[in-house]
Image (cartoon, rainbow, N blue to C red; front, side):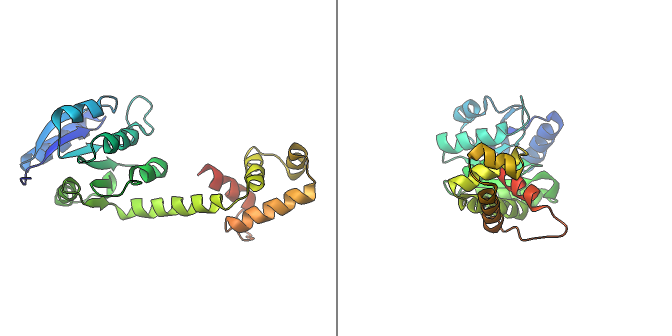
Length: 217
């Protein structure tokens, strides 16, 4: 591979898309295609066979996680093509799936934290050659999400039921009635949930709310 990279850019903002393309072209790289949504990204990559794809997370039509889902599809269909997610957001659920097959040839950088174009270009080269480029903040949030899922996995099926009913706003007595158990049994399950989710008694935080937030995180 020569120093000049062949790239596809998937970014819904025309200003950011053109600006990024201009910066990369000035530095000797070739932007072979640009798209403003994620729906045709896989086809474009198949046509142009780039070294790296730069993709935003939140793209049309719903502006939620289309870009990240497209990145996962690219990893599956074109495993030799580098994928660099470049976004303002860390979407832990699908980012974990993106890295599930290994971090080789994958990057995830946050737009607000890239202060030097040279650092960005270096990251592109690493991803293109099978390396990894992960922002420390992305790593931190992914590790936190992983620990949270591990904690939820420790709950028994009954404890999970109780937590889900708590998330619906039910009181202990209402949960007991829904599960046809005693209120004392519900209190015991809730105590176990707090213990397994590492939620000790606190004067400043409501453990019931924090437990529900873990479920919805």
